[in-house]
Length: 376
Image (cartoon, rainbow, N blue to C red):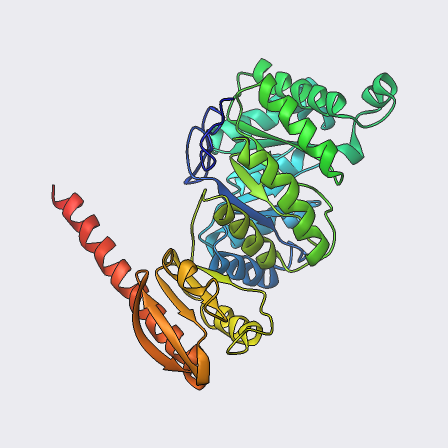
């Protein structure tokens, strides 16, 4: 039996779309998105929330534009943030035009929902004039009436057909700078729809399990659905949908990508669940350690293991590790090798010091390498 190498992920080929300065598709790094939940017309609150998402690593942020005040606020919002902004448009074509005029890098819109062919042409022209890409966003909860009558209920085939119908409207207007999503709150429905769409077109795909729930349940559902798709090579940008602060969505998104070795940002802490063998309080130390390492964006892996059963083996595969030992004295590993011993009371402070030092070294090496390339 032929089995593919277990770590190989062969990404689905797709064309490329740019969301402002951020490339999506055609082999570009898989990006992480989120969406604000402030009133968009409240510029101060929306900017503050976007900046928190930026600090968490968001590549793209979407804001809702349900009215004229929201669309106009984009001009002030985009001037104060670094990430490209996607304007979420549902039915009113004028909001899409206003959003394009006021700095949106992308329009989330279903062209079949905004009225006449003339209105679609106006929106497409505004997007072309202002360098906006688009996202066709199909949702199982709002499928067109004729598709529900045809299929009887939301199903993968109906969602794919809806997406392709909307895509054809843009294609007929000579607009191809768009990506597509086919989201559902049901994991099976969402994944099957994305698999069907991946086979049916070469546009970049925006992945998401919509309305996934509160932070714990939503994280589980999103990890299962997005994980299956990403492992099979499907997906170019992701949004984890949680009833939680948007920056929490970003953190979970990066954790999903890190777990599949698709993208790395910040410290990946490998820790044991702890048991009676632990020689220090693993759970509390890891909790505090992750909080204190949140500011580090440099990719690295750290192991925190409570005893010597698995500790040395895990440490061999990490940049920095600690393994619990007897009498409150533990072994610290650097680059997989035993380096020195440490007393329990110093665990977090000492680990933070080592990790920050390592991050600075990596950043300095990268800066020197970049300077060398630039000099050439």
